[in-house]
Length: 124
Image 1 (cartoon, one colour):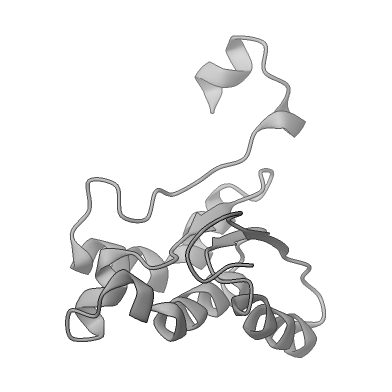
Image 2: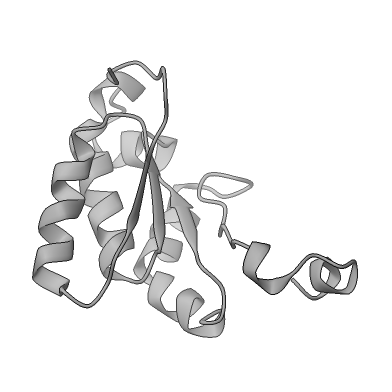
């Protein structure tokens, strides 16, 4: 973040992504999800984007489910991300937005930007 700002990128143009699935095993991803609120607290001045949709760690939790069969697991991970402070959640299946809407209603104080991937299998 410091390097980005030093190179002239304005603070308001920076979004932080903890990188679910990148150079992490399933245990690392689960631990990151469990502690996302701490990550968010450290970076409270920046919006956090999370992309847990259909990731391998969800497949592992769901007994090696194929990516197309991970939407319910994705909905659980995405709602946890929203509840733990993610400002932007990315997912493949637009129906996952329903789960986030319920989370937002319960939390009331937190608005989450929904970012379904266009053209992904399971999306319209």
